[in-house]
Image (tube, rainbow, N blue to C red; front, side, top):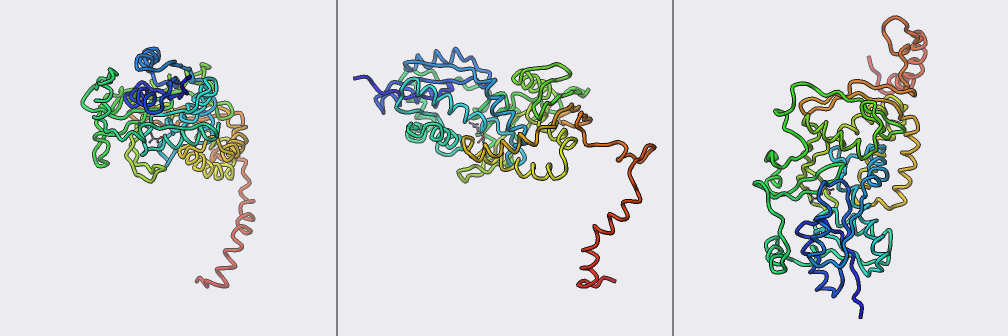
Length: 401
Ligand code: ARG
């Protein structure tokens, strides 16, 4: 009899490596692995080989970088989606894309189930499970790390017994890290004490401020309808633009985030992130919106940004609600085109200039100097009507002196 198949989202780390033989044994199944390149900067061919050596019958690697940027990162940037005003959602945005590749492979392989390496304490399990359910309601989702009840050390023993190479631990700490081109998430070890400053070895993309150069870096970022298109006058693909910004801003120590976060499963956790490109692009994008959106549009957009961030964080990417929010966001971005100049220096990112063909800023109205076109006398009548209800209420109810 042919064995049933399980398609596993495979990172090459300890959990997902142990999951290969564990799934094969527990479910008497063949395991096919899928590894998606979202810019995590790993040797994916080595990861593919490791999957095969560990017992996978097939190991697939897909380059998801352009799709990740175009379909997930840019819409979230346009929406201004930053979770709890701190976290640009790198991990959270990648999960629905991984779920999609997982489902595609499962359909192709005629698999019975898909699997992922998430534990039962995090947000990622929710994002995977809900994502898969939304895309293919009939597929089963298995999360071995939620079921097997092994401690980290027991996992290592399990791996040793089956000849699975255990990742060499570098440096003093073994953090739990998730990376893609939109950012890096670091958890565990000393970071679990919220009073403790993150040790320097938690960071990999950004330098500490004291090692940043004495001179600032100036950048010009050009946007078209809310999407970054060029850096310092050079048109770039989304992936290239984000990669360049990550290194330019990282060298200036920009992009470190230390966040005490509310997880969906009710836990508060201390999360450290590096998102140099994310921090710069959100600041620049917001600056361009202040120039090109009307006041009420800006106010409403801020409310929607929070909704959008919560939705992404909470694993509801494949929902009608997201499509509705996207429709609103797309409409707001029609005139968010132009250029923003930022200064990066010693860990700070400051917007120092902005311009747009659709700018709502009018020099003649704003200036206090020569060329003032504002009708000062009209202000008097405006204030008379504007203040009318306050005046009446004050006279009749508050009896001010
Ligand atoms: N707290 C973040 C989130 O839920 C990041 C989780 C990343 N995972 C990790 N193993 N560091 O999106």
